[in-house]
Each structure stands twice: as C-alpha cells, then as structure tokens.
Image (cartoon, rainbow, N blue to C red; front, side, top):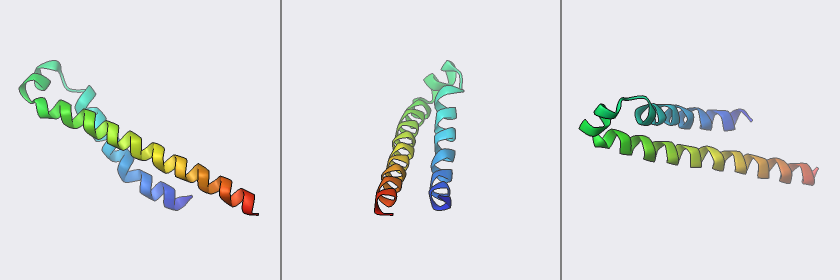
Length: 69
C-alpha cells in the first residue's frame, strides 16, 4: 500500500498544478497565454487517467491476492 501512495503523490501534485493552471486564472490570462489553458486541460486529463489506472491496478492486485490465499 505504501508503494502505491509513493507513486500517487507526484501524480496528485501534477494534477493539482494543472487543475490550478486551468481553473483558477482569469479569462483574460487564458486569452493572453493560451498554452496555460491547454497545459491545464492536458495535465489534468493525463493525471486523472494515471490515478484511475493505479487505483484499478491496486484493486485487481487485491482481488488476485485475496483469491490466492
């Protein structure tokens, strides 16, 4: 379990940074720096997919481990 958390911490930090870059700045800042919005959307999407993948792998691991005991 601790290995899963160690892997999720950097991904969660990337998620927070990219979601913050996408959602927090004003509309004027997004129009001046369009890459900021693109980075926010892509970073948020990729990090959510990675977090869900890790959690799915963990659930599968627990199910396999439970059946083998």
